Length: 520
Image 1: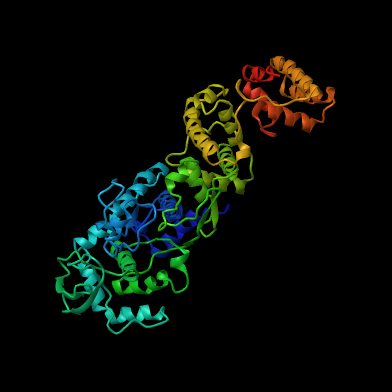
Image 2: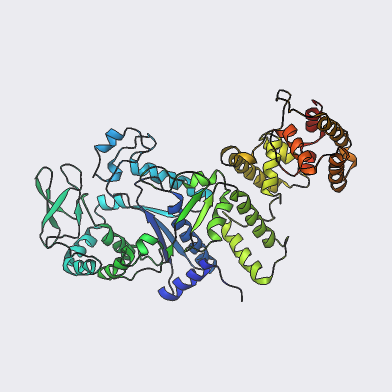
């Protein structure tokens, strides 16, 4: 019996712990208070992988994504235009803050759109729930009243996890002022039914609101989250280290949810993600973030999914923009070859890689493997052709139309990586007629002359013969092989090293190499 993929393990656990149901509900969500970064995406795709696993086991699944967009605007991110205007909206709900980029109706919606537009690219299409519109329509009036009825019980639960007990005048509800729009208010009284009286702490004005008709009341996070578990009958929702820490919001919510007549969902803790080879740490509040669209500039959607499908959620890993990009593409290609039987593997490895490959696909599994060209080689071909993707595709033997479309998309990512993120030593450009000449000794010039004669005869030599003749040119001219190669690279690309020389010259072709050598 091969080891099951972790998503299948959790799918089975959900069914086992929640019992047979007509439909299982899996949830994810976040406050759109800043750019939703790739670390947040780990939760979304973790849920998606479990949703797919449940569906593959024959279950009906509802996948909800909750935008906690009735949260408070606490600070102005660095990357927003008109910061002085935005400052005037501090302490108001983020859905009432203008979007100074001009993209959307409000600040929260702009951040939501970034995610909602990108997720379908990686095959994720949840049902979105907007908490601001729910709260503002008084949809949670019954739940808020229930919360007030259990005020003392909830205080006891929350105090278990606090170093200092909540004050005697604590109320389990927060109010946005009807006078200023800010959350700087104090609850004064509740009439035991639907009437709640509060004071605006800035203006000292007092107002009584009807929970059934108000847009101003909401539950604090530690009560809101478990309330929604009960309301939506959530069976599964993972959370990050911060929520899953001992005494964190998950521990609290596990007890609070019982007040609302439900049990906590099956969950797991996912670890953080770091970014490698691209400056700046992940942080929504500063605006210095890496988002899903940023990652998709370099990684194909299926390779992006592969990064998460091939890693256990509780394992920290890096999304790399440095030379590791080459290895990640190679790992994905190995997985694909094993899936299609193009590379042998033992039964356990084959079962593991096949499941990872299935879960990595955006839609249906392709009917054939992609064109198996190493990512490094693709990068070299693109540099030879100065980014002309169609020229690269035209020179590849035996490529099918389906493979061409997939390789075209990969080449777009490869060229973006080469031109934006690859290390300097990886980048090169073939010398042109206007490039400055390299200073050569008479011996070196003679060696270049001999190399030119060899390249003219390239079509009549196989790879092995051509490689051997390269070594012979160095030897015949009394040059050490490394020195000869270094000199040839300087002449061809202006650097001391480059792709493997024999293959490089062949890939460039005589029509590109001979004019360069002919200048010496």
